[in-house]
Image (tube, rainbow, N blue to C red; front, side, top):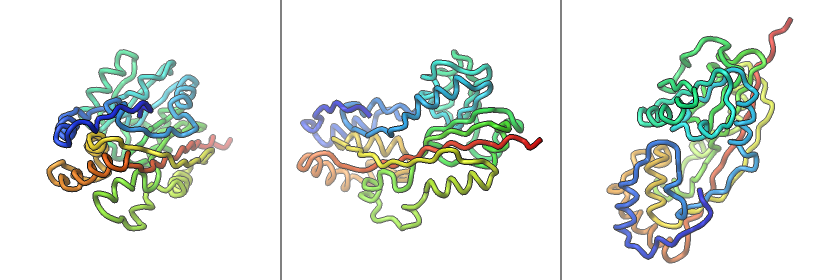
Length: 264
C-alpha cells in the first residue's frame, strides 16, 4: 500500500462507504488503497527474490496466482511457465495479464491434487496462498527443486478482525504459524532452507479503506457486508476522524523448502 496519504475524512461517512462498496475487488491489486492506507513491507523483498528464482528455473509454477499481478512483473521467465488460480474473475484477469508473456494459466480449485504430473517443476512459488498442500508441492517438484513462498502469518491484522468479531480464541489466533508450516513441509519430505517472520505496521486512514479491505480479503471477517456491520463502521469512522488512523499489525513469513536429490 502506498505511503502518501490524502485526507478523505472531509467527506461524509455515507459517501466513503458507498464509494468503497462499489469499487471492484477482483484481482490482487491493492492500488485502490493508495493514499488511504499504508502497510510496511517485509525486509526480504519477496517479488524481487521470486523474480531471481524464476530467471534461473527451467520449469516453474506459481500456485494461487491471484490476478497474476506479481508474476506479470517478473522480468525473465523460464521456458515452461505455468500459474494456477481458483477464483473465476481472477482466472480471467490472470489470463489477460500472463498469456501474452507465454504463461499458461490453469483454472484449479486450490484443492489436491494439483493438475500436474510428478516432478513437473523445478520451482514452485506462491504469494499468500490460502492453504499450502505440502504433499502436492513435494510431488510436483523435481528432485532438487524448490518451493518459495511468502505467507500470511498468525493473527494478521487481528486488531481489525477483533474489532468486528470480538476476541478470538488462542486456536484461531495461532493459525498460520510458521513452525507448523515447517513441520508440515518436513513431513512431506522437504528440507526447509529458510524460514523468517516479521510483524508490520498497517494503518487505515478512512472508513472507505476498511470497507474495501474487508471486501477484498474476504476471510478476515467472513460474510462481511456494510449492512450487517453498519453500526460498527459508523463508530470506527468517528474514531478515525477523532483519533487518527486505525492501526493494526500484519504478520508475514517467508519459507523456502527444497526436495532432496534422489540418493544414488
